[in-house]
Length: 307
Image (cartoon, rainbow, N blue to C red; front, side, top):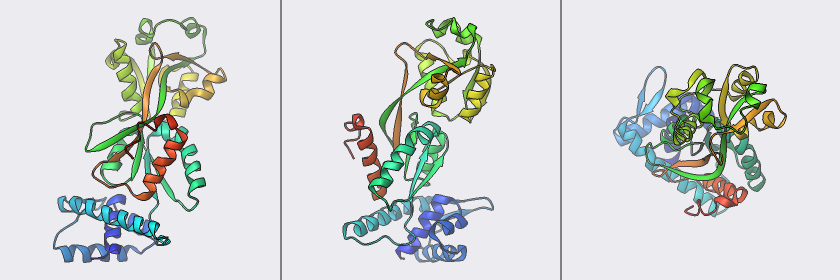
């Protein structure tokens, strides 16, 4: 076997398809297929389960993937240490991120990262927090950013930013009169627009409300939506209230287009986390990216000291 075969195998696993791997490696699809076939023949095992819609790893493929990732990461470190330029098909750092960190935190982090490492390439996959964890565990992303913790696999969560969740409401006399009053007095009566299932914002909102004695089942849920812009516009138009990150609604709150209410006394706090798989060695680019996060958010230094 050789590194090209292992690299093709890793990318097929990451992309879930031969065509996706070929695109990332700048190879033809038959070449990628030939690399995989040669690897399976030499090892005498089936590495991939192929269907008309997707490609997934067999049990043996899952086991080999761990070793293949380690070998490619080690190759990258050797090339970096001895000043060798990476191969033309060197893969970009793949980052999976939920909506809030993707839209409001990652742009600043990625800009600093490119300033420090001008040749770095990144690929960002935006999904909800459950999707981020899924991509990490399926090896389709190197690191992730989530707004909640999901106990799945051997994921490690490193909090680096403290976010605030707020209740947003339309600007009206009814809601102005409620400012300063406890949410428990009125939130159950109002139609609520929630983020979708799998959203870290929705999960953390449920946790914070529960601490205040309010269960999600008691809410008058009018709709569930994925897009935060759609949610904000719907609230502005009087469809109902919602619970979002202050980062996402700050512009509308500051301009007076929406009213904001704290989720609980002192604010509804939740952590934004870096997440990765404990069983997979981080590639050099991921380690550098995390160092960039530490530079931008020095208060997180103690929490990230293990890296």
